[in-house]
Amino acid sequence: MRFLDTVQDLAGAAASLESLAAAHQQSSIAAAARELSERLRQNRFHLVVVGQFKRGKTTLLNALLGEPVLPVAVLPLTSVITVLRHGESPGAIVHFHSGRQSRIELEELSQFVTESGNPRNVKQVSRVEVFYPSPYLRGGVTLIDTPGVASVYEHNTQVTYD
Image (tube, rainbow, N blue to C red; front, top):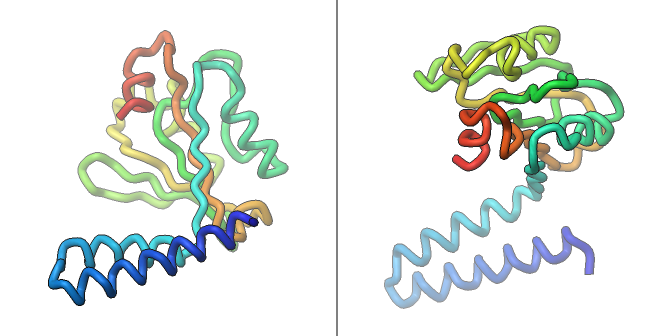
């Protein structure tokens, strides 16, 4: 059975559970089942790349995209969570801990997601969403890059665990 077939089967089962729970006045279960069914019907697949620092997580994601979209370097680099989604044109949105958002060009990415451009996350970035017109991302795939664990930068390890 293919992945998407399995997801659709699960969405149907969640919808059935919602109906059954509603019939028995179990509103919290019905609401949870409805939310699950809706999420499954979106056909989104999240691939989170986690591992020790300097093991090629970002390089792997660039290879999947077919282009060097994310910055890479010899020293531990990624310092905040980076979410890659399909977009008609390249760009990114920086999400700050304060709730503020800022749209940036991909050329500015390293100023927010790297240890050299944003040491110890002094800019208080919670995550960055990157939009890119990759065929790999078109079908609902979301790629998520994380800082390495067991890094010399303890705060980067903590971001991944959080």
